[in-house]
Image (cartoon, rainbow, N blue to C red; front, side):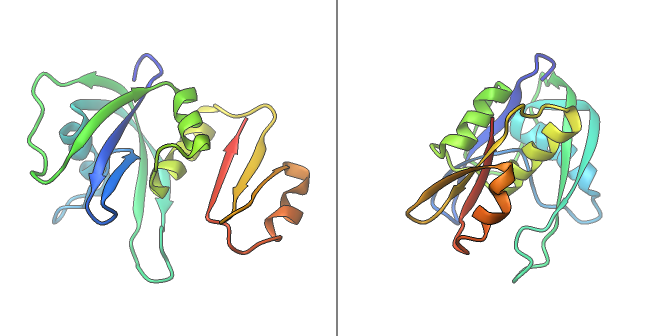
Length: 171
């Protein structure tokens, strides 16, 4: 937002039978560009529109079995809409407004489930805006262990196990 806050959704996802925290997203409609799709989705899902858009790149979430590509954008210079367009009837969405540190803490804590595109988009947003860490440490979450290393030991620690399920970077 113009106040430096992050708009994120708590959305029920039927495929996993639970709520996830995620940035607005949607499926491209026939003939629609990725940018026009996210412009439509952000209005429908959050009730805001953006004047400035930054492309954050493309994410390929599951190349081992799918050819899906997710185009990532940063929406800036937001304005609350007076009238929200109709979205999909099957969507169960709660709009949350968080500070950057609140989002970082949610990602690091594991208390909320976030989808991969949201973590990737937030990482790339922080790179673009220069919101980064002074003393980064890397947290590797294994099935039953927890290992923390500094950047110097990253290569050694990374290869200890091939069963890493999540990687979070925090300050």
